[in-house]
Length: 172
Image 1 (spheres, rainbow, N blue to C red):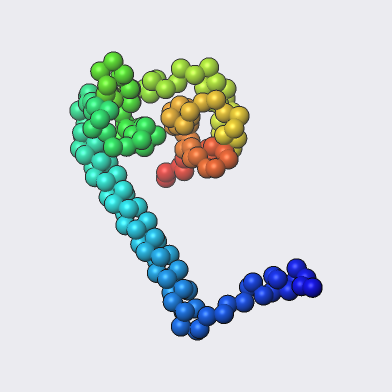
Image 2 (image 1 turned 60 degrees about the horizontal axis):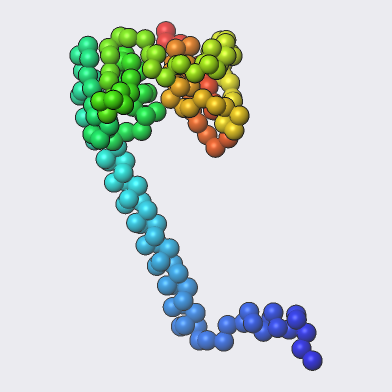
Protein backbone atom coordinates (compact mmCIF):
# COMPACT_ATOMS: atom_id res chain seq x y z
CA UNK A 1 0.00 0.00 0.00
CA UNK A 2 1.30 3.49 -0.94
CA UNK A 3 0.99 6.32 1.56
CA UNK A 4 0.18 9.95 0.68
CA UNK A 5 3.71 11.01 1.64
CA UNK A 6 5.10 8.66 -1.00
CA UNK A 7 2.73 10.07 -3.64
CA UNK A 8 3.76 13.65 -2.91
CA UNK A 9 7.45 12.77 -3.13
CA UNK A 10 6.94 10.66 -6.26
CA UNK A 11 4.91 13.39 -7.98
CA UNK A 12 7.47 16.09 -7.27
CA UNK A 13 10.41 14.35 -8.85
CA UNK A 14 11.31 15.41 -12.38
CA UNK A 15 11.95 12.41 -14.63
CA UNK A 16 13.22 14.24 -17.77
CA UNK A 17 16.76 14.99 -18.82
CA UNK A 18 18.75 17.98 -17.63
CA UNK A 19 18.34 19.61 -21.07
CA UNK A 20 14.54 19.44 -20.79
CA UNK A 21 14.69 20.99 -17.33
CA UNK A 22 16.87 23.86 -18.62
CA UNK A 23 14.48 24.35 -21.54
CA UNK A 24 11.44 24.59 -19.25
CA UNK A 25 13.12 26.94 -16.77
CA UNK A 26 14.59 29.00 -19.63
CA UNK A 27 11.15 29.34 -21.22
CA UNK A 28 9.73 30.71 -17.96
CA UNK A 29 12.62 33.16 -17.68
CA UNK A 30 12.15 34.35 -21.29
CA UNK A 31 8.39 34.83 -20.77
CA UNK A 32 9.03 36.74 -17.53
CA UNK A 33 11.65 39.01 -19.12
CA UNK A 34 9.39 39.65 -22.12
CA UNK A 35 6.48 40.61 -19.84
CA UNK A 36 8.73 42.94 -17.84
CA UNK A 37 10.02 44.53 -21.06
CA UNK A 38 6.51 45.12 -22.40
CA UNK A 39 5.42 46.59 -19.06
CA UNK A 40 8.37 49.00 -18.98
CA UNK A 41 7.83 50.01 -22.62
CA UNK A 42 4.12 50.77 -22.07
CA UNK A 43 4.83 52.61 -18.83
CA UNK A 44 7.49 54.75 -20.52
CA UNK A 45 5.12 55.52 -23.39
CA UNK A 46 2.37 56.61 -20.98
CA UNK A 47 4.80 58.83 -19.06
CA UNK A 48 5.99 60.39 -22.31
CA UNK A 49 2.39 61.13 -23.34
CA UNK A 50 1.66 62.59 -19.88
CA UNK A 51 4.69 64.88 -20.09
CA UNK A 52 3.64 66.03 -23.55
CA UNK A 53 0.16 66.77 -22.18
CA UNK A 54 1.63 68.71 -19.27
CA UNK A 55 3.79 70.75 -21.66
CA UNK A 56 0.86 71.64 -23.90
CA UNK A 57 -1.30 72.73 -20.95
CA UNK A 58 1.62 74.65 -19.40
CA UNK A 59 1.88 76.65 -22.65
CA UNK A 60 -1.83 77.41 -22.35
CA UNK A 61 -1.33 78.77 -18.81
CA UNK A 62 1.19 81.42 -19.79
CA UNK A 63 -0.19 84.42 -17.92
CA UNK A 64 -3.44 84.96 -19.80
CA UNK A 65 -6.31 86.09 -17.58
CA UNK A 66 -8.59 83.33 -18.92
CA UNK A 67 -7.87 80.04 -20.70
CA UNK A 68 -9.85 76.91 -21.43
CA UNK A 69 -9.28 73.39 -22.73
CA UNK A 70 -11.90 70.85 -23.77
CA UNK A 71 -12.36 67.62 -21.86
CA UNK A 72 -11.40 65.63 -24.97
CA UNK A 73 -8.10 67.49 -25.47
CA UNK A 74 -6.99 67.16 -21.84
CA UNK A 75 -4.74 64.13 -21.28
CA UNK A 76 -4.38 64.70 -17.51
CA UNK A 77 -6.45 63.53 -14.59
CA UNK A 78 -8.37 66.16 -12.64
CA UNK A 79 -5.99 66.05 -9.62
CA UNK A 80 -2.96 66.53 -11.90
CA UNK A 81 -4.70 69.32 -13.78
CA UNK A 82 -5.78 71.02 -10.57
CA UNK A 83 -2.30 70.78 -9.10
CA UNK A 84 -0.73 72.27 -12.23
CA UNK A 85 -3.26 75.10 -12.36
CA UNK A 86 -2.77 76.01 -8.71
CA UNK A 87 1.02 75.91 -9.05
CA UNK A 88 0.78 78.49 -11.84
CA UNK A 89 -1.69 80.73 -9.97
CA UNK A 90 -4.86 79.67 -11.79
CA UNK A 91 -8.20 78.50 -10.49
CA UNK A 92 -9.65 75.46 -12.28
CA UNK A 93 -13.38 75.25 -12.94
CA UNK A 94 -14.95 72.37 -14.86
CA UNK A 95 -17.73 73.54 -17.18
CA UNK A 96 -19.83 70.47 -18.06
CA UNK A 97 -22.25 72.52 -20.19
CA UNK A 98 -19.42 73.49 -22.55
CA UNK A 99 -17.45 70.23 -21.98
CA UNK A 100 -14.30 72.07 -21.03
CA UNK A 101 -12.05 73.09 -18.14
CA UNK A 102 -11.75 76.83 -17.53
CA UNK A 103 -8.73 78.50 -15.91
CA UNK A 104 -8.85 81.96 -14.35
CA UNK A 105 -5.61 83.68 -13.35
CA UNK A 106 -5.39 84.89 -9.75
CA UNK A 107 -8.93 83.87 -8.79
CA UNK A 108 -9.51 81.99 -5.55
CA UNK A 109 -10.22 78.30 -6.10
CA UNK A 110 -13.92 77.84 -5.41
CA UNK A 111 -15.06 75.25 -7.95
CA UNK A 112 -14.43 72.20 -5.78
CA UNK A 113 -14.96 73.64 -2.28
CA UNK A 114 -18.75 73.43 -2.07
CA UNK A 115 -18.59 70.26 0.03
CA UNK A 116 -20.00 70.72 3.56
CA UNK A 117 -17.00 68.92 5.08
CA UNK A 118 -14.49 71.40 3.59
CA UNK A 119 -14.74 73.77 6.58
CA UNK A 120 -14.11 70.88 9.01
CA UNK A 121 -11.01 69.73 7.08
CA UNK A 122 -9.73 73.32 6.93
CA UNK A 123 -10.19 73.58 10.71
CA UNK A 124 -8.26 70.30 11.25
CA UNK A 125 -5.31 71.75 9.31
CA UNK A 126 -4.49 74.18 12.11
CA UNK A 127 -0.75 74.55 11.56
CA UNK A 128 0.31 71.05 12.51
CA UNK A 129 3.13 69.65 10.36
CA UNK A 130 1.10 66.73 8.98
CA UNK A 131 -2.27 64.99 9.18
CA UNK A 132 -3.59 61.65 7.93
CA UNK A 133 -7.25 60.93 7.16
CA UNK A 134 -8.47 57.40 6.37
CA UNK A 135 -9.72 57.16 2.78
CA UNK A 136 -12.52 54.78 3.74
CA UNK A 137 -14.25 57.35 5.95
CA UNK A 138 -13.58 60.48 3.86
CA UNK A 139 -16.52 61.58 1.66
CA UNK A 140 -14.58 64.34 -0.12
CA UNK A 141 -12.82 63.64 -3.41
CA UNK A 142 -9.10 64.16 -3.93
CA UNK A 143 -9.56 67.38 -6.00
CA UNK A 144 -11.75 68.84 -3.24
CA UNK A 145 -9.17 67.94 -0.61
CA UNK A 146 -6.39 69.42 -2.76
CA UNK A 147 -8.19 72.76 -2.94
CA UNK A 148 -8.76 72.89 0.82
CA UNK A 149 -5.18 71.79 1.55
CA UNK A 150 -3.64 74.30 -0.87
CA UNK A 151 -5.69 77.16 0.58
CA UNK A 152 -4.30 76.35 4.06
CA UNK A 153 -0.67 75.88 2.92
CA UNK A 154 -0.67 72.08 2.69
CA UNK A 155 -0.08 69.44 0.06
CA UNK A 156 -2.18 66.28 0.04
CA UNK A 157 -1.16 62.89 -1.32
CA UNK A 158 -3.26 59.76 -1.60
CA UNK A 159 -1.83 56.42 -0.54
CA UNK A 160 -3.56 53.05 -0.32
CA UNK A 161 -5.25 53.77 3.00
CA UNK A 162 -4.93 57.47 3.90
CA UNK A 163 -4.88 60.99 2.57
CA UNK A 164 -1.62 62.47 3.88
CA UNK A 165 -1.54 66.23 4.38
CA UNK A 166 1.91 67.83 4.66
CA UNK A 167 2.60 71.48 5.42
CA UNK A 168 4.47 73.40 2.72
CA UNK A 169 8.10 74.11 3.54
CA UNK A 170 8.74 77.74 4.46
CA UNK A 171 11.06 79.47 2.00
CA UNK A 172 13.70 81.78 3.46
